[in-house]
Structures are given as structure tokens and as C-alpha cells.
Image 1: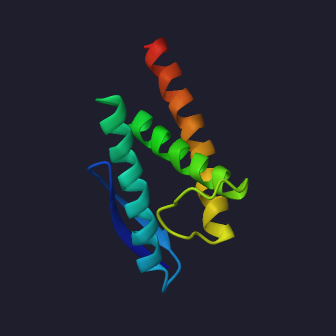
Image 2 (image 1 turned 90 degrees about the vertical axis):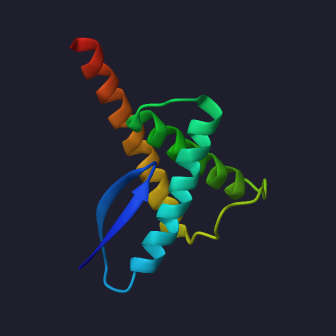
Length: 107
């Protein structure tokens, strides 16, 4: 199993992937990074979890529109496995953001 360092929203992450998929992971991470920067540009200063949440939502929205025949431009032609992975990521980010907000309110 390979490990790749990617940068998303000015933060570096070590992410595991299958051997030979390193470049693909870098490519999709670059798409997520652009969306995170787009979210910050549109909404102003955001916390890390919110920035990643909005990036995930923007990506999921593009995928949903594409699947529904909207045909809007998408950063890269993802295969169905990547699309499913991005949708799961968006769901996990929503859950994480909710937990972080609950923790912040309880502190």
C-alpha cells in the first residue's frame, strides 16, 4: 500500500492508496483543493471542517447534476467508483462538521 501526501485547503494530509494509484489520488486531491479554495473565496474565512464540508458539497452537487443530465462542466471525468467515493466523503464531512459544531456548543 502506498502513501501520498496531498495538500487540501493549505493543510497537508498523508493518504493511503493502492500501489500505482498515487497519481490518480493526487489528481482528485487537486480537484478537492480547488473546490475548498472556491468555497473560501465565495464565503470568506471558514474553519477547516466547514471549508472541507463546502468543498465536498460542491463536488457532490456537480456529480448529481451530471448524473441527472445537467451536463455542466466537471473538473475531471470521474469513473463511478470515484463519484461514489466523493459522495461518501461528502456524507462523512457533513457528519464531522455536525460533530465539531456540537462539541463547540458544548464547550
